[in-house]
Length: 189
Image 1 (tube, one colour):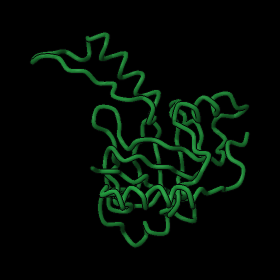
Image 2 (image 1 turned 180 degrees about the horizontal axis):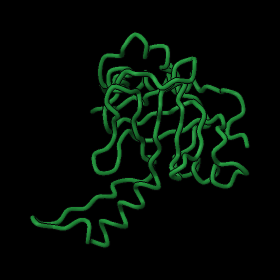
Image 3 (image 1 turned 45 degrees about the vertical axis):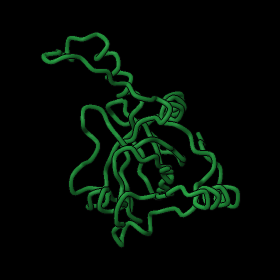
């Protein structure tokens, strides 16, 4: 199963769009912090076209003959996780959620028992289904041993596009061994 054929980049139109935003007084930023020298080689300068959301990619992989067989793909999502799990310390591993999912949380008063709240349980399950684990790998295919926040200057809430090889893991989760990453600029007014 092939989810992506070749690497196509959109450049001119998107670059012009960013220039117009900047000229209009908007602050356009990509990564949240400094990027480690080893991380610079992983960053993609222009957004690749053809990226798909977490739920779409996961569904396509689950329909494959062998969902555990890695396939080339482009995935986009928002850096974040369920119940605070986003980063794996000392490794370039983090989670992204389907960008189209939106806010699945809600609030209750003091003493609320989220484990017994049907709304909280349903939202947690929906969020888990829409989450992918991203593992940034080196040229040898090994997960890099630098925290992703340090390696790539990432922070929670950023939207990223990951180029890599994805598969359904043994627990039924979407796993992507990332070989490249594009950080969508944040536009602040």
